[in-house]
Length: 237
Image (tube, rainbow, N blue to C red; front, side):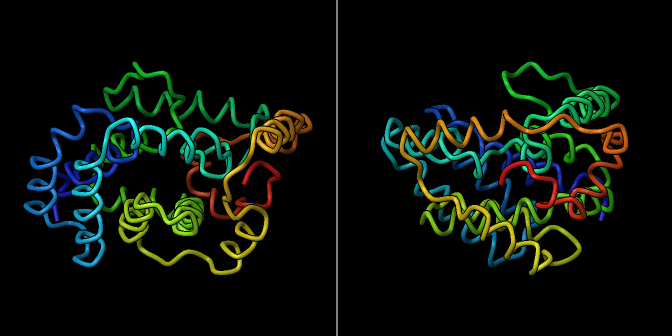
């Protein structure tokens, strides 16, 4: 399998996790055709993603946007910013973001969005430039986070769960059952009212400063050890 096979699939999965707009809806037929032609996703997962794409393309765009905000912007445990789930907003996350941004630049990518480099759609675009074996290894490093997002979205009965399941299926292993169970026990991803949301963000910003021994490794190391650290570091979820 060459490095090209995964490129379109990963970018499509990333695009489906971005804030929906009419341009995304209009692109759904072309995206579906590319996903089918590339044939990298397992059939069961591909069929569910294609069904979600059809559903999303047919929805009223304002309803779709409202759902997206309720899920990913108003539920901290559903954040698509990967490092938040390991470090919250501690200093460790800041250094990891700098290092990850440098990796992107080395591949010719420059962040022109409003999101930090650990934003999952951006991470998938980066992976689309790598050989498949490196893609799978990198996904192994974030697998427990992806699996927890998938499970929380499933509990919210959201079609976005199919996209996370497809990403999960591209890794070389299954998520650690005990770590997934612990993450779900810590936060199952339920909808929050305004008071609960304020408390959740206050908790995240109140994280203690890390000690010297806890300093963040380079992004490559962080991606490799995310599974080891998650969810024990104390950041959300």
